[in-house]
Every structure is written in C-alpha cells, then in structure tokens.
Image (cartoon, rainbow, N blue to C red; front, side, top):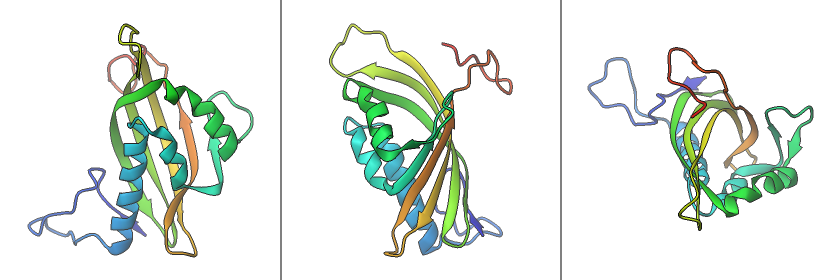
Length: 161
C-alpha cells in the first residue's frame, strides 16, 4: 500500500521519513491532475477518456448507477458552463493495481458565453477509484460523489452560497 500527500508534490530530501515518489505514484498523480484539469477546462469531455469503458458513476439522489454514456449525457451542460473550482485532494491511497482518491471541489459554474449570467455555486465531494490496466495505464473506474448542502460542515462556511 502506498499513500502520498494531498498536495501531490514530490517530498523534499530534507523531510524526515519520506522517500521520493515511486513510478506508480507519479503515474497516479498524472492521472488525477489530468482529470482535475479536464474538469476545469473548456474541453470537459476529455475527462471521459480517463475512465475505463465499464466505469460507473454513483451520483447524488440516484437509486441506480450511471454508465459512461449516461455520464456523458449528464455532463452536457459543460458545453455552456465551465467549472471554476478550488480542488482539494484530501487523500490518495494506492494498493496492488488499485487505489482511490478523496477530493473536494468548491467553487462555481460559470457561463462560457453569457457574460451577464450569475455564477452558480457548485460544491461536491468525490471518491475516485482507479485501477492499473493490463496495458500498464492507470484509469479511473468509479466516481462516487455527493453535494453537501448543510449550512455548516466541520466549522466551514456555508456551501449554500
């Protein structure tokens, strides 16, 4: 099992008890950063290229799992809106050929074309599961997420806007 810092930064040689990232950790770091960058870009659909064909999304308020084609349909709104969010990687763990990352996205959906449209508050917490494929490439396999709506969450300011 391997874990690395939420900052995804290579530890310095001066840090006691740390060692440089392994090749596996660097590959997972690249996957996670690529996925985050896709979600924040004007080309959101590249995000889906980072998933296995049998990927599953567990979305809030859904009683069923969502497949890759359904997820692409759900995220069609990104043609008109861009996510502008601060992303925190809360935890990353790598096991033998599998792993997970806990992430928090906090910010706004901003209209791409209508400059007069007000931004829409967008906060979500995600559990991304990933696996090493037979070809040696790490890909996302699951996106399990929720949208916190509490007035206060662990002493933090309101997520409601």
